Image 1 (cartoon, helix red, strand yellow):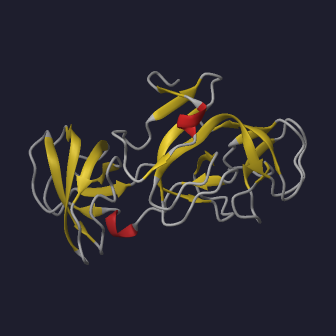
Image 2: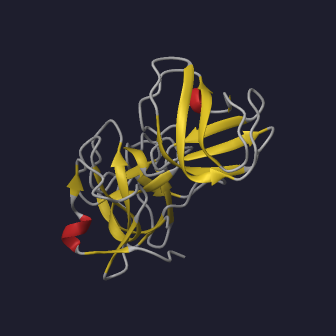
Length: 239
């Protein structure tokens, strides 16, 4: 259940911005009719209205890496041994998880990170403290972008994590509202029946198709029958 959210007018829900507008990525907005949105950062390509979007690909250069210092409990800065080049603040509003060894099982939200030009030490600043001690070259950490940071249109890979549908075009590297619940237009990857559960399509970029296999992420329900390559009303149920 969403406990805290920003009230959105129809105009608000269609706005885009080159800046964060004081909002954290992932902030929730709700229109008066109950449609739910998430404040999102588009990735390296434009988002298109009516097409299903997915979270950014996890970067192996910041996954399962040892910490570069020993830290007492409650540190709010962690330096890790990154495996390759990483841009500054790629992980802003994302998460650092201690995934193995000393301190494992803890996660903290990220304020921002330094940049590296290759394999090097990467400094990560946190909103909240890591509640346990960490050991140099023993504790292993992973960085993950917020699911609504670096959002891209689905490339018809059903193993990706669907995050929602934009109602308007959102320019690459701009912020905007991506809808996660309620009625919206969705591109059909095939014909499907009213009431059918829908998943990421397997053949058309940004499209939806009928749920037909175990393990597929259900993202919506068909309000009307789907027509291949056309946009039809669906009820998103991601949030």
